[in-house]
Amino acid sequence: MAEPRPIREDLMPHGVDPVQPLAGVWPRIKSVVSHAIFWTYERGSWQYDVICAVILAFILLTPRAWFNDRPSLGLSDLRHRQGVIEIGRTRGGSQYLIDSRLVDSFAPLKPDDAVRSILHERLKRAVTIKSMEPVLDKNNVMLGYSVVVTP
Image (tube, helix red, strand yellow):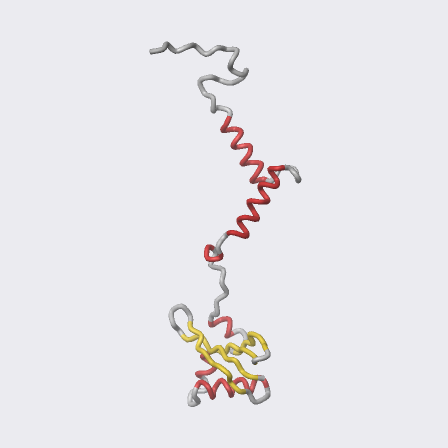
């Protein structure tokens, strides 16, 4: 078995402790993290470019599902607009959301007839319903109807 040789002083850089070679690493890591968090790198430096690339990667590569940022139709959305919301217009017709409570208030009428009557009052013209589908929340509670009418 070979005998251990002593470390020669001339091989080690000055200021480095041979017992703890990683002693100076922790302050350097803290400095890099501090500069990155407080954005103190000069514009145009490679560190600045790396931080910008990380931010862009986060924005562009993060799945939407992580944020649960989807608009949801709630009863309050319909209530604040008197029960009828125009969603959009196309060549095929106009689409509306109609509160189910407003439709229920025309109780003896069927939902199709009630919706036709509501839109006739609102638009001041006769309408022809192209399609009508119920809008349910995640608990299958009826919120309203999605109605497409022809022009």
